Image (tube, rainbow, N blue to C red):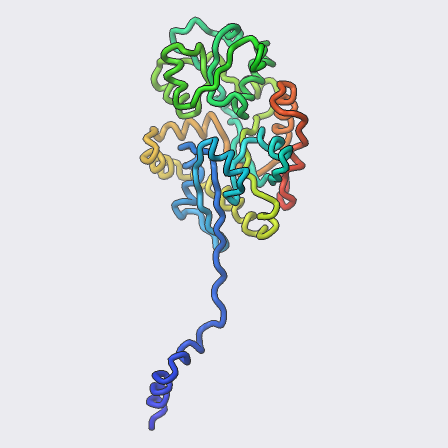
Length: 334
């Protein structure tokens, strides 16, 4: 019998022989890193390249999710996500509760343009300076947030307004963010701090104006650009697979760079999903916020200064230096 016929009969009788020549090992499974960030159309642009396969990895897949602030706070405590964006003001509070967080990179910093933290009034308002807020009502989306604390710092340090939440020079109301423009429009408040997309719409409408840009005020006074949010993880997760989290940092940085290098593609895509004009994203990245994606000595100095000023306001108790929260594999850039 010919050799070919014998081989054919053997394969029919013993089909497992067909796999002998295959590799004796399976390709390693790709690790999934879940990442939660503040629900905001601008941040959808930050993560767009990751979500649309423009930034890839042989090591990990990143699954992203935008969350509202209450969900973000709950998810941080429950360790539901591998990496999560958190406000810098929340790090000392978490540590005091025994929740260990490790900083991976900077997620939001004030832009050199200095817009943000605006105090908005109706265009026909009699108010023209923050000093005139004494005895008035100022509405905000979250009175103890990092962003509003930065507003309070400027009002107190530059304009001499006592911003104590109890017994201060003005009444400060916490109002759901979605209701702030309506509250301002119907004069339920005299002034308001708006979230970024609302501020952009206020500019475009011509119905409102600012009496201060407190981000710019703080930059001028303290010679630093405050950091609002950082990306963090947990010691046990980082220890289990440090290479995966180093890869997350690389991909996050690459996603930012892709968005800024391919603005038309990214901004038009996110615009269709959010309903915001693509010009909003140009305005946001150009004037309001930076997404550094790394951690530098400048960031450390800005956060530590913010902690000192927040302690003066009584927003937080004594905070440890931000360096104590850094992941030990993170190298601070000059």
